[in-house]
Image 1 (spheres, rainbow over the protein chains, first blue to last red):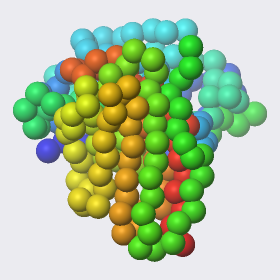
Image 2 (cartoon, rainbow over the protein chains, first blue to last red):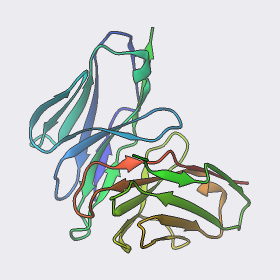
Image 3 (cartoon, rainbow over the protein chains, first blue to last red):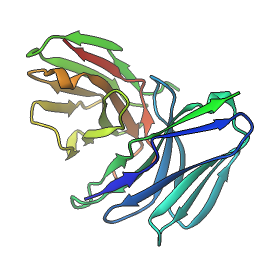
Image 4 (tube, rainbow over the protein chains, first blue to last red):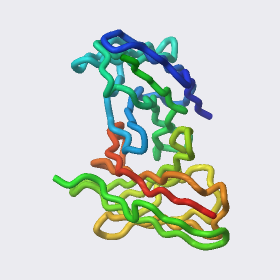
Length: 113
Length: 114
């Protein structure tokens, strides 16, 4: 089977840095994805890490350690608009080669002024 | 370029009825995924279609079914609705059927079962 663990809530102030962790357990691991979802909106793709290390995209960075089955999303210079839910996701290959993308339960980030 | 579109935006049904939800993927995308998101919860995988075929199915009862049409649009049908089926149903598309991590989501259909 597969599972992803991430904190349910994180609170930070505007301008700060916040790290959202994700640990996973899955078969046939290919990489870790991150999605952002504003309240009631469509989830949007943020990043994908297939290899160990840090990937930076503007204010957002994502890290992966395959040996530790762990990754995180780092948000810098927080803005009010970053208040949203953040989901990590992995591809599950438990059923042959027709994998499906499995999402964690999501971390609700609240940015305060 | 138009994104993933879903209809209707909201749907209200009563227990025992059937619901039909529709999804149009981004032009050129052949894969369509369906997810259920109950209030405050994560995305639960429902179904994955590619090139008109069902490629994978989540842990949902058979009354959840769907299909993909030749133009790659898709339909999700939920029969014998139960109160716990109330949720946001999200459709997503991707460029190809094999391993593809970047899904493009629609804004969803909010299904309320009374």
